[in-house]
Every structure is written in C-alpha cells, then in structure tokens.
Length: 130
View (cartoon, rainbow, N blue to C red):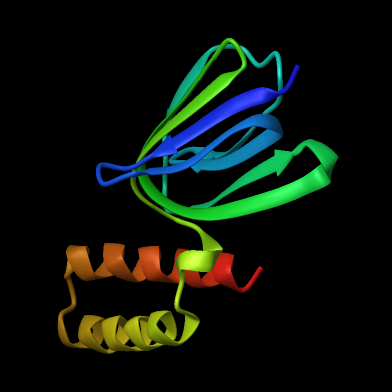
C-alpha cells in the first residue's frame, strides 16, 4: 500500500498525492527515508530537497525550508515554512538572488536572515537544476 503525502505551507497546499513509494527529507539531524509501513515519526525539517518517489518510479523534488514532517499509518504530512516546486522556480531570478545575498552577506557579517534566505534560494536553485 503506497503512502499518502500532503505538503503544506502557511500560504498554500503544495502537493497532495496518494501513490508515493518513498519520501526522502532532510531533517535537522540528517536525511530520512520513509517507505510504506514506516513507524510513527516526527522530525524537524532543515533547508534542502524533499523527494517523492511515486508509483512507476516517477520522482518529484521540492525545495523546503523549516517545519515538521510527521509519519503515521502510511500518511506523511509535511508542514513547512517554505516549499516550492521546480516548475515555480525562475532560475535566472534565483541566480541573481543568490549573487545579491552573497554580496550582502559580505557586507553584513552576522545577518542570520540573509543566511537563511540564501540557503533557501540555493536549495530552490539545486532542485530546479535536477
């Protein structure tokens, strides 16, 4: 029996599927893979890709940042601060944002918000290039 996956942010529901055979996510303590029959789990998410492998070996990769992933009875719920699909990413604009944020970080040594935005943009760029 496949996994049902729901990925939501405060602004919208990003993905819902009922045919996932594997979910790979980056938690704050490392990556985790979830397959049907996985034990109940709750992890805090980090910045990075979230991969859904669907029936027929179709892959869907999203860039996510922050939030939580919960597994219960073959249902995976991701409550993320930020999630974006590759089709929603403007690669040129994202490259420009990365360059701007890197230059601003040089000027502002301890700008945590800029570091987070840079990590988010780099994750989106990496997903778009997959």
